[in-house]
Amino acid sequence: MNDLRELYQETIIDHGRHPRNFGELCDATHHQEGFNPLCGDKLTLHLREKNDIVEQLMFEGSGCAISMASASLMTEKLKGKTKNEIQEIFSAFHEVVTTGDQKNIEKLGKLAVLIGVAEFPARVKCATLAWHTLMAIIAEKAGIVSTEN
Ligand code: ZN
Image (cartoon, rainbow, N blue to C red; front, side):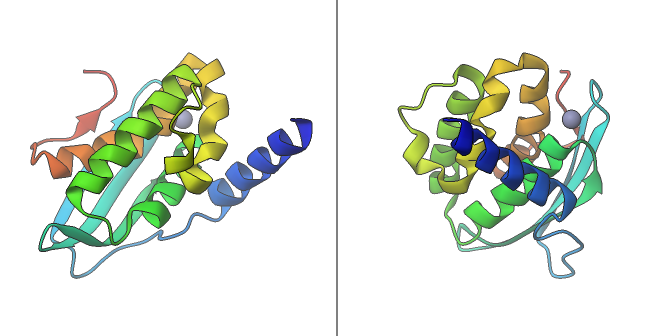
């Protein structure tokens, strides 16, 4: 378990420092801002959708390692997925990071490294910021997403 924890930690630090899919997306069909005032994490998601499939997903912003790593891993995982598949992965992810329950963890792939945040309720908002921001696009909600409303 210690080796696994170390590997998880390394992945989070790596993605936190060198986020993947970081930057603008000039042919994006959707943009959405998200903010976690408790930690100061801020991000903007850029998404290109075609025929209900998220073809491309990128983000910009700044925040703690957990928020950046979660956004980075999320963009890697969800590219090419349909909205329904994304809903399903979000539910599994949300369950894992809020309860630590491993029942659906195989749906998450590398995102499983964030299971540790279940032990730190304040960090759950960091880990789910990018996801709530994305779900606002999918649900076609307007306005900035805040973890505090
Ligand atoms: Zn944070």
